[in-house]
Image (cartoon, rainbow, N blue to C red; front, side, top):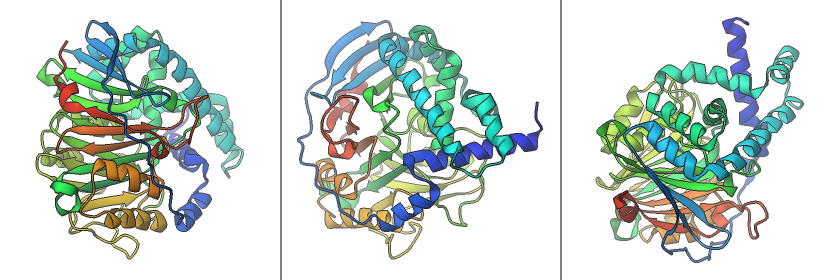
Length: 444
């Protein structure tokens, strides 16, 4: 075994590797990308698919549907249960084929990307030898050991249920969920309400700009959770891929929405990071699963043991407002439209709006999102956002979620899958409409 100091450098090195490989840009190139990307994208003129879910299969504690048309179809799965294992077993049974296809492909891709980056980064030889010798699996097992005591045991039970039903390795399922903590992703978000939107609706954007080469978009899944006991919270919707139960995108039955941005370019207001704490994908999931109000969500964020540098967005359709969160291990700050940060000429404040484009210090992307919002100000609907905001700003490579938290409706698009046609980026593709009033009310 190696000592704790060496463990620290190993884990720190992995953070560097993943941050520089995310979106296939080094830190240097990504900085230039933020500074110089001023070209506007074209509007997305593809009609939104509003067709009804099509029944596919049913098992105890689960029902599988498909939504969307043509190449832009999404699996819609409902799981019911008294335990996390109930959720996972139904999920793994209904999506066994998809899980067994995406898991090895995605895992092989991420391993390859790490080894590729090792050759280009100036890292100590002992560290390079360590990663080559021990591999990604070993490092992620260490990561899991560091977070285990902060995790909800029912989440592990759910992963166990997936592994048992889909007949995949349980440790591999866990490792998949540790990747988010060190890859994060470059994304955009907004929360709009009051005068910013048509009719004063509360809207939220979650645009995920992440790796489109791992095949995740071949198996997009929206999971509707139906707890049958209060210890599992209340119904919520999670947007991800087959086998992935952490939350990056989603809405709750109590009309809370969540968004997230990984931060590569913080300023000195962020504080430090830690590898030990509750992974942010499960912080976000806890908010959707257990928080009843915006205040509940912000209180949880303030008191949970946090980990890395992030920007979170939380919106509440009941209260008709949203907050942006500056998030790190040691510091957390909450912003509304009156005190939004960073305050700069490239990131002005907008009444009844919080927003962030791609990173904390990313002037061109921040300003593009500002312009897109203000150009449509007062008239913004989910449809207009899909047409003239995400597509013009060019954000949401892997998937995009637009939430109508007033009417409890979600719009989702995914990147082009293998052997599919048309544009690669999700924001250029067809969105599907999901009426969560209907989906949350579905019973066994």
